[in-house]
Image (cartoon, rainbow, N blue to C red):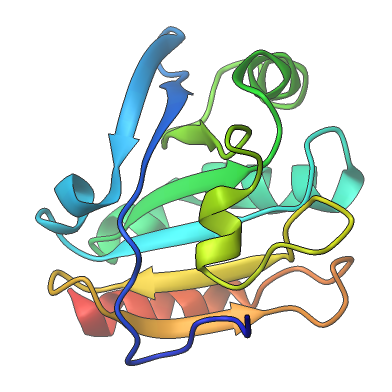
Amino acid sequence: MPALKAGDAAPDFELPGFLSQPEVKDVTVKLSEYVKNGPVILMFHPMAFTAVCETEVCTVGNEWQRYAQAGAQVISLSVDSVPAKKAWVKAIAPAGLPYPVVSDFWPHGEVAKRYGVLREQGFSERATFVIGRDGKIVYADVRANIRELPPFDEVLAAARNAA
């Protein structure tokens, strides 16, 4: 299945994850609940404990004020399990991240598959979707090379426009 694109309906999901600020708290993240509050930046990163994924999630965390000013909510997800993601976030961002980190572990990669970004190797593409309040994708970026970071400024501009 090809990756979803701008104009497509964003498949709803409900996944386990956690918030890590000010303390670690288990949560269940349902996309349809988030979009009610404004645009959502949905960041698929291939795997925890990899350098480019660390840079991606920490860049968003370190520049959180820009995302908040854009009216954006961020959800970060990968096919890693919740315990693995907790250990990873603790290692790379000891103060935590200001957005939820969720697990598409079981059924393995099901959400990534529905967005058309699950690789046959069992992990996702590096993909970023901005989803408007109407549940439609307003921006999609799927990296041909998973070692490339997403275009953060373009993503922010799309979120601002969707706010």
